Image (spheres, rainbow, N blue to C red):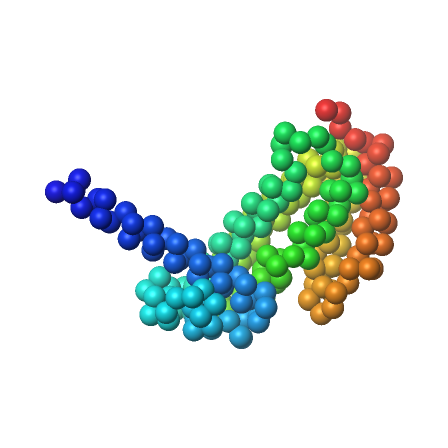
Length: 207
């Protein structure tokens, strides 16, 4: 009996997964464009092209939807980080690494994450997940930066310099919420590349 019903159930399960994925993607897009207060379940459902009833089938409450979105945003940011430079590609130069990491902090996913941070400060149910997942993404970002920059964190000041760079990149993401900061960002990227060259050039790991 199970073998007979399985083919009938699979397409339905696939459609359900696809609907859930569209809702999560729409929730992230709405957070980035409208912020927390403008991202209701109805708005997200409309953006995803599904009925409100279908949205509530997957996520009965707004908190359910955005708690799942916290996980989704964290996963997508980690995937974007891992995809910056494929492992088989030639080692990138530092300017390319600095630019790529800054772009990651000024893109849509980080903008959505910022709105989740703000929401989490008022929504305890979100707060726990945001703190936990941001810690995970932060550690992964730091590890990837060390690897891509060819840094030796056992050398004095190297860890602090990399963390300072990532803090700066996060600050640029905050500034980008209010205005297009592209021109100034280019100058900051150039300066931080010079700083990293000064500090890491003396302590670059070998291949």
